[in-house]
Image (cartoon, rainbow over all chains, first blue to last red; front, side):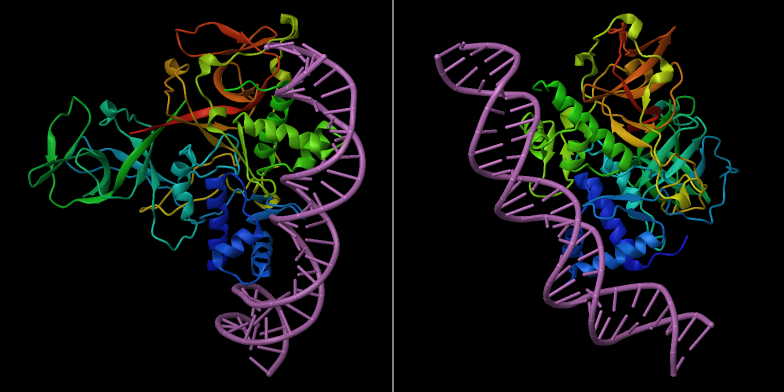
Length: 220
Length: 220
DNA sequence: ATGTTCTATGAAAAGTTGTTCACTGTCAAG
DNA sequence: CTTGACAGTGAACAACTTTTCATAGAACAT
C-alpha cells in the first residue's frame, strides 16, 4: 500500500477517533479546527490524497459521509510461535498476533458512554507503524491460567501500563513471553500460575513487563 | 423506555441498517426517500419523537450526525417482547432472512487482500489474523445468554455471514439488538435465550440478522 | 366536546458542508 | 533544473441539510 504521510495518517486517525467517540464522521471544518488549518482546502487536499491512496472513500457531495478501507496493512508479518524451552513447566506459550480492529465506523448501538469502542479503539490509534506499540493481542497456548478463566486458544488483550499487585501480566522471561499473575511480597516479586496443579510462586530477578492483561477473548 | 410507534421503530431500524451498511448516517432526505414521504418534515417529526423518547440523540445543525442511546443496546433480553403478528405458517424460513451483511465492503483494492483493518506493532513479530472487514462489537447487557458463557458486560464480536442453525446471532427486533441463538425447526425460525430460567422459544417473523457472534471478550 | 399525540404536506429559511478557483511555497527525485 | 508530490492560504460558490413556519386529518383518551 502506498505510504501515508505523517499528516495524512494523523487526519485519518482523528477521523477514526471522532467516529469512535461520537459515532458520526467529522465535517471538513471539524478537521480544519482540530489541526488549526486556515483553509478548509487544506483538509480537502488531504482527504483527496487519502482517497487516492485507497484508505478512505468519500461520498461526493454528502456531508460527514466516508468509508474506511478495510486495510491499513502491515505487510511484512511473519508468523511466529513462541516456544518455551526453559525449565519452567508452567510457562505459557504465546503466539503473538495482530490486534483485530475491524470495527466499521459509525456502528449502531455505539455511544461514547458504552466504553466498547474505547476498548476496541485503543490499538487502532497506532496506525502509524513508527510509533511505539500500545496494546496488542496474544493467543494463549497452555493451561496454566485456566483458573483465571484463560484457556488455551483464547486471545488476551495486553495493554501497557504499570501493573499493580495481583494483575495478570505478559512478562518477558528468558526471552519468552509468559502470562502470569504478578505477586509482590515485600521486596520480592513473583509470577504465579493460575492453575491449582501448579500453585507455587516463581521468584524472578530479571523481569520485563510487556503489559497488563485487560481482557480475554474466547471463540464461541 | 417509552414505547416507539411502528413508524418510529421502522425509521430507527432503517437508520441503523444504513449505518451498518454504509458506515455513515442517512440524511433526512435519505430517510424521506426510503419511506416515500412527500416532505422532509415528516422525517423531522419522527426524529424529534425518537429523540424525545430517548432512543436517538441528534446533533443540532449537523448533517448526518446522530447517536443512539445506550438503552437501545442489548439490554435485559428477558424484557424484550418479540412481536409476532402472523400465523405460525408465516414464520420466517431461514433462507429468507434479511441479511445485512451483504456489504460492498470498503474499497475494491482491499476487499480480499487482507482481512485486517488496522494493525499495530506488536513487541514481537506478529502473525496476521484474518477477520471480515465488517465485523463489529456489541456490549452485552442482560443475563439471558449466561448458559452460553456470555455474561452481562461482555463484549461480543459480531461478524457478517449467513447463520447456520444453532448459531448465536445478533438480531434487530423492534429497533433493539438482541443476542440469541437461532433455532430452525422445520420451516420455522425461533430465537432462543440461553438461560434455563427462560427456556422457551420465541417465534419471529420480522427479523433482521446483523451478524453471527463469533467470539466473546471478557474483562479480567 | 376537547385536548393530545401521531401523522403528514408544502414551502421557505437558515445554516452547514463539500467543492472549486487562483495562488504560494517546500522538498526530493530524475 | 525541471517535474511532481506535498502542504497550505483565502475567497467564493454550489450543493446539501437541517430547521422552522403554517396547515390539517385521524386516532384516542379525558
